[in-house]
Length: 225
Ligand code: DC
Image 1: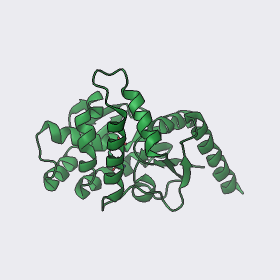
Image 2: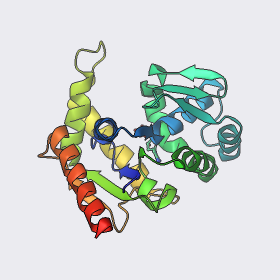
Image 3: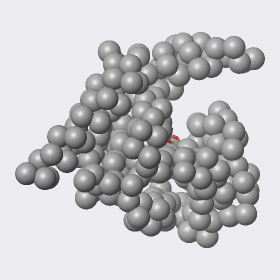
Image 4: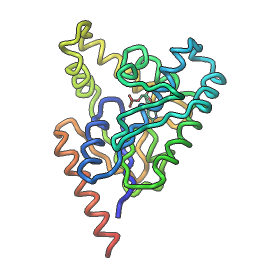
């Protein structure tokens, strides 16, 4: 029986929406590890810490565990602060890749993520879940999509906002974040060797979820043979 599912992939590949839907279908918990990096970035910005001060940021992550409450980890507490929409703000979004590059921050958060996943029956979403955080996960999925498709999704979400960005700007930011996430020395974004690779360019969310569910059925049947 597959009890821990890791989903990795670049920004806007559909990890969040697919991960949530999958967790609901399986009645599993859902953990978005990106939120944990965002919470530390938010805290650093709030405290006015220089983002390049690796020691200070590592200490911040160690001393302010990120707690996630609810089946879908909807409530986020960092230290004693409850945070929500501010984690998706543009300042946090621009800073978080830099925070996520810092090894001491990653060490602190990876340790917390392993504890959160210990009980199983969980879908864990991030960049390094199959490779570093939970290499023994029963199923590792790597979602990909072209930068243009991913930027278009992000851009559509911003339409109707008062200061909606141009598509070209969203595309440039998507590529810039890919570059930082894939080229960092510690835990770069890449598929695990045994990951189930899914290109979502031509697939709806439901189709992606169905493919993952049928992969789980195959693995379960193979395990029972
Ligand atoms: O998925 P997201 O956009 O909320 O992730 C925010 C940042 O955190 C992004 O730069 C990638 C990084 N991240 C990471 O390095 N490792 C993870 N397991 C999850 C996110």
